[in-house]
Length: 472
Ligand code: G6P
View 1: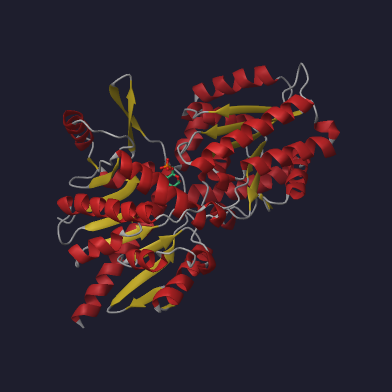
View 2: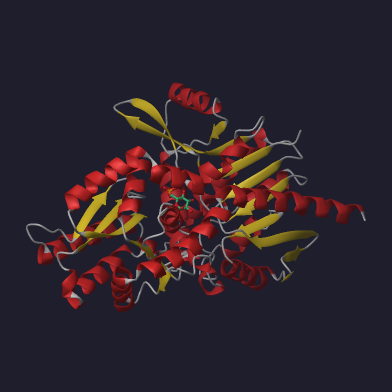
């Protein structure tokens, strides 16, 4: 029976080392949830990096065995590979370029070489698992070369590729010295998926400029192969967030937070630490709100959760300092004995505490400069069972294409963002309900499970179609 192999840079389980002991932590990320039902089926596996460096054979054997029991196959990376492939080419070249921050991008031959080598390492790990007719689903920007490598080794395999981040304009792609190779790498897939139509359009434009292949109605004719290209906006496990928000534990945490805040109203922001998220711009907009509408002083607090991420990459460390400084400055300028303008947390929160924050906040502030989708926006909406609350959403997040009942803003426009916060705080309840109801319906319908099914069905279709063309 054909198997399905999921491949992503990170495995859904993260292995951590604390005081010389290894611990295994299941990821609560959207991808892990959505694909859980697939890779746990008989025979299927997930191939990826467990998130740590191991140089001891015995320890590596232990990690492999533990993960194997849960249907995962680790790809081990050396310290140099973590530096050059993960922190280097993936997160200091591709990430800034694809998020429209080319000024942060580095162009290092040694990083590119490591990127090729690690994609080959992933290829070898997948080939150990995959038979000639298996289905392989490759995820995200860290593995752009993998589809073509797999295609060369297994011409008959069914290969899907999904990009979780934006695909930028050709004008950004053309700056990369390795643009052509990257596009050829992706084209090894039978089906290529994006969150939005805009990303897909940019991708097709780059393919046409760099490789001369054109597409019609989502079919890309690439030499002797037809590749399907389509949009699949990713969703969340809606019921899980509804249940988390309704749980006793979330209610208890919310009551504790409410007691600590007193009557003060809450605006919530939750992100991984990343310059693409617009965190500093958001802080400046909150400061402007306090300047412009002094009536909110002492009345409203911003609760800001920043989850540590990629702290070995220079731009991330610099951003951390900028945020620390901004929060310190704004709090020092405005705080009183009974009111703190910004409650800033630099750490990850467990699901029940996140759910409590979603319940507590009247306004959800999701204002990335660029974002492939942004699932926090959807989680906030799912958690609002009473249909009260307002989502302020960047028009440059993929989620804005679906959540058009949010207050859509340009995250660079500090003044517009400050006005949106004010509008959200004074929005009549009937309007909040109308908007929230429409968004909840959408998030409930297009879950991460629906996303997985749609992609997998379309991938199977792409292969059937290829077969019928071959036999004509
Ligand atoms: C984004 C990317 C993922 C990545 C995640 C966390 O969502 O699309 O591929 O796994 O960020 O980043 P990290 O570098 O910690 O894996």
